[in-house]
Length: 171
Image 1 (cartoon, one colour):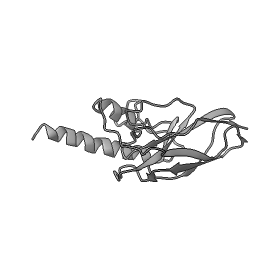
Image 2 (cartoon, rainbow, N blue to C red; image 1 turned 90 degrees about the vertical axis):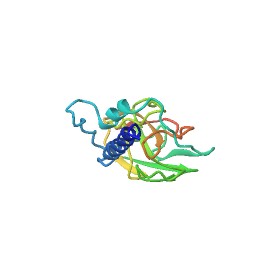
Image 3 (cartoon, rainbow, N blue to C red; image 1 turned 90 degrees about the horizontal axis):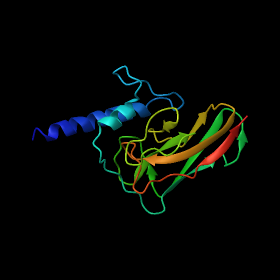
Image 4 (cartoon, rainbow, N blue to C red; image 1 turned 30 degrees about the horizontal axis):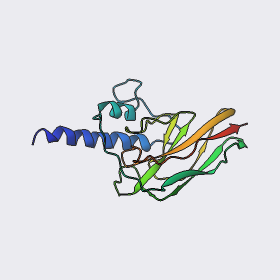
C-alpha cells in the first residue's frame, strides 16, 4: 500500500503544477520553478514524471484549426488569433472528461515530445481555461503558428490533434 502513495502524491503535485502553469496570462512567460532554477513548472514536472504517461484517446477526424489569422496573412499588432475545434469538446485543464482537451499555441517552434506534457514557455502558450482566442504582440517579421490540443494534464492525445502550421508576417 505504501508503494502506491508516492505515485498518488506525484500525480497530485503534477496536476497542481500544470494547472498553475495554465492560470498565468497567455502572453507572459512562466515563472521559474520554486527551486530558483530556470526550469518552468511544466519542465520540472516532465522530468519528474515516469517515462510512460497515459495518453487520452482522440476520435478519428478530430481536428483543431485557425479561424484567424489566415496562412500567409500580413497583419499588425496586436495579433488576434482564434482557434477552432471539431470532433472533441473543450474543457479546462484538470477536467478529465473523456473526449475533451484544451488548446496550446506553438509560436516559432517545432512540435514538442508528443508523449510528454506540453512545455509552458513563450513558445508554447497554454489555454487551460478552455479559451478559443487570444491577442499576441509579436516582433515585426515572419512567424509560424500551430495549434496542439492537450488533455487534462497537457499531454497530446493519441493520435495527436494538431493544426497545420501557418506562417504570418507581422508589420
